[in-house]
Structures are given as structure tokens and as C-alpha cells.
Image 1 (cartoon, rainbow, N blue to C red):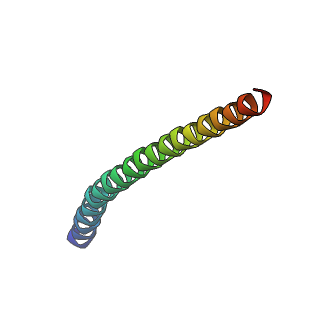
Image 2: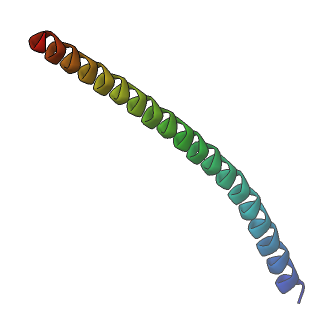
Length: 71
């Protein structure tokens, strides 16, 4: 009977340490995931802004050339 108690105690300690380790892994995964999300969002917004500026610059140049040709 003491043998079963020792085995259960050992099993409980092993499971407890594994669950504690899982929390650390989960936290690390969350940190990596959120950082990746934030960096990706920033890259996307910067790309959008640069593309918009290029588009506006192109539009303004085409209008200017059109106005010069019409004058």
C-alpha cells in the first residue's frame, strides 16, 4: 500500500512540475505572438502610408503634366 502512495505522490509531483512548466511556455508563446502581431501591424501600416504617398505624388505629377500640356 505504501508503494501505491509513493507512486501517486511521485506522479503528483511530476504532473505539478509539468503544469508549472506549461504556464511558462504559454506565457513565452503569448509574448512572442503579441510581439509578432504588433510588428506585423506596424509594417502593414507603414506600407499603406508609403503606398498612399507614392499614389498621391504620382497623381499630382500627372495632373501637373496635364495642366502644362493644356496651357
